[in-house]
Length: 500
Figure 1 (cartoon, rainbow, N blue to C red):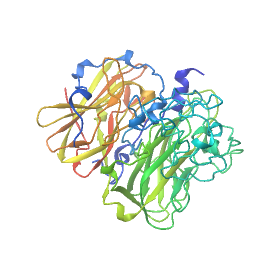
Figure 2 (figure 1 turned 180 degrees about the vertical axis):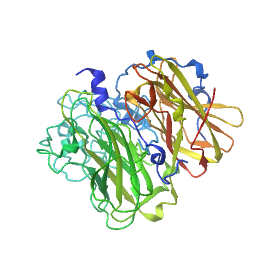
Figure 3 (figure 1 turned 90 degrees about the vertical axis):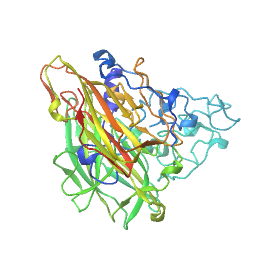
Figure 4 (figure 1 turned 120 degrees about the horizontal axis):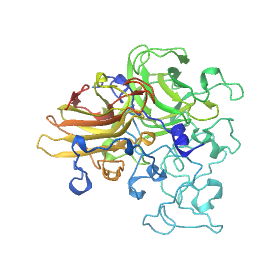
């Protein structure tokens, strides 16, 4: 399989969702941040490239490391808070990443510390079984639940969202014999202890004979719903979420429904929300999506959270494609970690800003830059952002035009198969974007938006097909231009005006 095909299989592209699927908190779309040298001024709309920008990049597992230990500054997950942001790319975990080497005292995360057998204990992807005892925070093999907490499995290496995360222990690490017979076993994670949280799943009853709904043959593409009920017996509150999906997902848009449904597959119903009303919940546009994207929670986010009803019913809108050469399995694991109700004093709200679908009627061979603006109508703090588009869009840019005339770059993405989500807080350092180098990146720091500011976004679209490109939930033959994210209070428009 080619590298591009592998990336297409492992890419998931919708962090937050469509329309009411846009974030967390409500279901309606609708300070000190470093500035100056660390930011890139948004270029004029005409400055973006076209087809040549749609190139692949080298995967970097640094995206899953905390900002202070990540030499590239990247960080990965919440939206979507259903479309809320996504730093980092889907990783091919069969290829060992380079180990980071930030400063640190001997024996602490970040040191280059080959063990007696030449094992680099500071590499978060080093197999737990190869670690010396003094680097083991706890024994992983034999676990049946992810323990959570502030102790890393490998205490000699930095936090890594996928490979060194106590909230998302991989099934293949806890049980080396785990083998479903399908691609993507590396994404399965153990659930929390029932006293600490719950796991919502989309999974067949048997890997030996899965129901046809779960199977996807080469060349197939599906967009439908699945209903799944959580196991919590009483009302609960939560903030931390870990989402994992097998390869082949374009997006997963999640909603907490107000009524009960029979668990299992359901037909496609509307844009992003199943039957009945509900509240949005973090989704994903890649195989791994976490909130927060670090072991720690930023101080300004410690009071954030959301409510779950007893035995909360979830609706999951799943868009999958199989561009590979072997049968694939649709499967999802979502860990939800409880927090005390008294700790939640503010609920996250969603951001969902749509470019006009009527603008997406592009003849074959034509290129267009779709530039939109959306006013901030009441002061708010933006927590996460991500752009949603399909494979015909080579660049997705978001920036803020402040009322005082200053322009601030918030988000740049150049590779559809490696779409980031970025979170903005006091502990995260996002990569510095570069238009010239076509380098993904985002704003770093707490991101306050005031009434009178405007959120601008741009999709650089080229129709390389042989039929008109339209607004549709199809990876290669349809296109979209949507900003998703999450915020705390305030208000931002849900529909944007076209800027010519």
